[in-house]
Length: 125
Image (cartoon, rainbow, N blue to C red):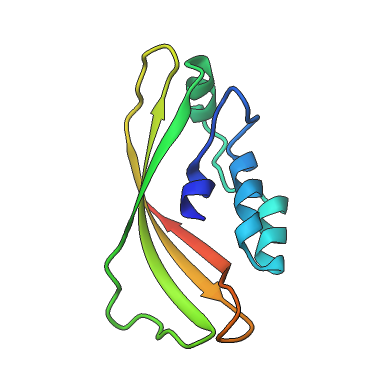
């Protein structure tokens, strides 16, 4: 889900919001609705810069270290910390600076034998 959330292509997507909509497929109904209604990308000049280079992002995700004192997982709730490194790559040879984000992901499932869904994601630089 984290990879999908950060994967964009300026030649196909109108904004980073489209990645949010794609990522909503992995989410609970409530969180999917939230993602589809409120763009989380800041309105700065980043997208324009990327678009001028016809850029797409490469994304690598690694498991982060669990925080001591953090929430305890149960058979129907789990918590993950992922570190996403996002690098814009232009089709004209340009490469932007990599950005690293820590994603705190809350997972839920109705029963211990059903599939996991993302219930929330908090992003920190």
